[in-house]
Image 1: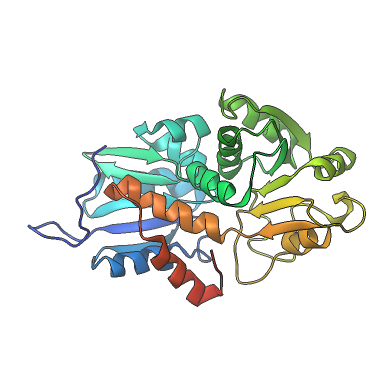
Image 2 (image 1 turned 90 degrees about the horizontal axis):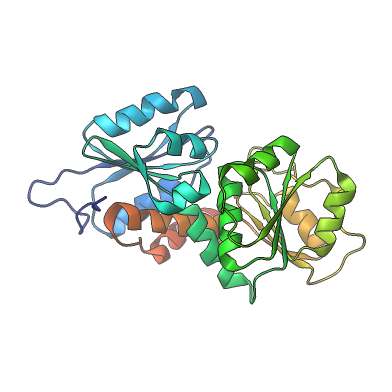
Length: 302
C-alpha cells in the first residue's frame, strides 16, 4: 500500500480527506481530539470524526470506506477490530498475526488493514519495564487482548495467562492465531476460577486490562477485590489499562491498594494514534502535539 502524499496540506489539486474512528460506543473517544490537533499543527484541512457504528453495520460502513471518494482512512475500536480484519481485502503482517485490525485504509477500490495496537503496546511497555516479565496476565479475549499477547511475545515474556469470563473465549484466542505469542507459553484461565486468578496475581509482574470494563462505569473492575494478593505491598508489578477516562477507575484504585503501579490507557491511545499516521502518511504524527491536546482536556501526562 502506498502512503498518502506528504505534506498533509492539499496541493496540486489534492483534496482534503475525512478520517474517523469507528466504534460502539464511541462518544467517549479522544481520537478526534488527538488527530484534529495533529492535523491543525501540520497545517492540514483533513478532518477526523467519531462515528458510532453498531456491530451489524460494520460491513456496510466498510463498503462505504472502500468505495466512496473522500475517505482517507479509519481507526477501529471496540467491538470491531476482529470484524475489520475479516472485511479487509489485504492486511499487514502484524494485523494477520494478531487477528485484529485497528487501522483501515482505502486504496484503489480495496481496503487495507493494519494493527498499530500491538507495536504501540510494545513501545509503552519498553518505556516502563527494565526487563521482560516472566509471567504476565492479560484480561480479556478480544482484539485488544490479541494485540497484548502479540506484544508480550515480542518483548520476550516467558508465560502469558489469558483471563476471561468465558473460558471458551480464552481458549479460542489461544488457538485462533498460531504463533501469536512467539515463544511465550500461553495459559487460558477462567475468571470464575478465583483461586487460580489469585495465584496468578500473586506471581505476575504485569497485568494488562484489554477488556472494556471500566469504560462506561469507572466503578466497575475487571478484577474483583477478592482475587488480589493478600495485604498491601509495594513494587508488586505494573497494571497497564487499555481503558482511559476522566475518572480514576476501580481497577486503578485496587491495583494501587494492593501494591501495583497503575497506568491508564492514555499512553497507549496516543502511541497507537501516532503510529496510525505511519500507515496513512508514511511517518508518525507528532506525539507532543497529541499529548498537549489530551493533557489540556484530561490533565494526563506521558
